[in-house]
Every structure is written in structure tokens, then in C-alpha cells.
Length: 181
Ligand SMILES: CC(C)(COP(=O)(O)OP(=O)(O)OC[C@H]1O[C@@H](n2cnc3c(N)ncnc32)[C@H](O)[C@@H]1OP(=O)(O)O)[C@@H](O)C(=O)NCCC(=O)NCCS
View 1 (cartoon, helix red, strand yellow):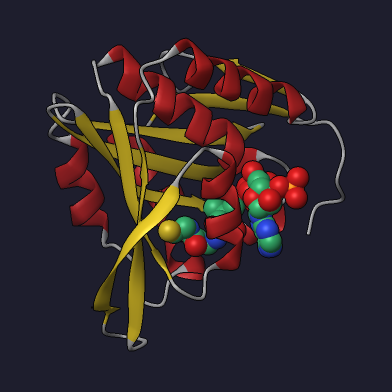
View 2 (cartoon, helix red, strand yellow):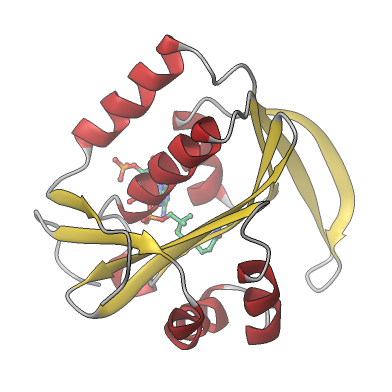
């Protein structure tokens, strides 16, 4: 674990060149990780997908993605390098995803989360997600159910203010770049 403290995190759109670094995290944090070809196929659909990576220096420390379907956007993946967790990296990524969704005209956000994933559920609750249902045995590799969560009516000044408040509480600095180096 990296000791807590202010850090500068740079967010960029994920590119094919980032997939190796992303897989390094993906394989550590999930019992059934996505494959590199799956990430590449997601990146090949930019009209309906948005993926960001977070870097500290040159190192990729987290990533997150979104699938847009008309007025809904589905958070498809969000993960942070175990060494860099609890530094607000996921919060920064989710703020960026939500703003990207809003820029694309989305009104509602949704996602699935493992019943046992307290860290993720806490994170999502902060962003206004509430549980609305259960998908039984959604994760067969661990025989676990998914909780389906929604954040409705995010295209409001109140939700923009929530995002700004969450962003302000994150320690350190967040920079946004259009391209990775
Ligand atoms: C869930 C995950 C993305 C959170 O990333 P993170 O960068 O550590 O999250 P943040 O630092 O932005 O934390 C924001 C809030 O989420 C909650 N949270 C994060 N990690 C937590 C933990 N281990 N236990 C309890 N709450 C936690 C807290 O409320 C935290 O705020 P706080 O630090 O002020 O208490 C990270 O734990 C992870 O990558 N897990 C493995 C992959 C995964 O489960 N992804 C989600 C799939 S649905």
C-alpha cells in the first residue's frame, strides 16, 4: 500500500497501448478478469463506450469504463491497483465517467456489483447509486449474486454539484489530458 497523502493523478482516455498496464491490474483484482481482446473490442466502439485510465507518473494505477445506451449509461468496469487503493483514484475516475455520460446526454447511470463487494458498494452509494434488484448467480465463478444499482436523473444541477463536492474531497490534484504520453 502507498501511504495516504496528496498525489497528482492524470486521467486520459484509454488507448490500445494502455491495455497491457490495465491487464496487470485486472488480473490482480478479479477472480475472472476480462481479457485483453475484450478491452480492445470495447475500445473499438468509441461511439457507445468511454474508458479512462488514471496514472501516477508513468504508471497506470486505475481505469474505468462506460457503455452508453440512449439515456442510460452502464458502468462496465472500474478497478484500482491494490497498492493505490484508498487514494480517491476510483472517485476521480467515476467523476470523469459520470461527466462523460452527461456530455453524451445520459439521464441515468447503472451498474452491477458483487453482493460481498463492500468497498465498491460504499463508493457507488456516495455517487447516489441505490440498489434496485438482484441478479441471481451473476458471478458463477464465485457462485455470487449481483446487486443492480441505479443513479436516476443525473442530468440535474444537483447531481453536478454532488460530483463537484466529491471531487473537492479527494486529496491531491487531478489533471485531465486528451492523450496519454
Ligand atoms: C472498489 C475500488 C475500485 C475502490 O477504489 P479506490 O480508489 O480505493 O476508491 P476511493 O479511494 O475513491 O474510495 C472512495 C470511497 O469508497 C469506499 N471504499 C473504498 N475502498 C473501501 C474499502 N476497502 N472498504 C470500505 N469502503 C471503501 C469508501 O467510502 C471510500 O471513501 P474514504 O476513503 O473517504 O472512506 C477498489 O477497491 C478496487 O479496485 N476493487 C477491486 C475491483 C472492484 O471490485 N471493482 C468494482 C467492481 S463492481
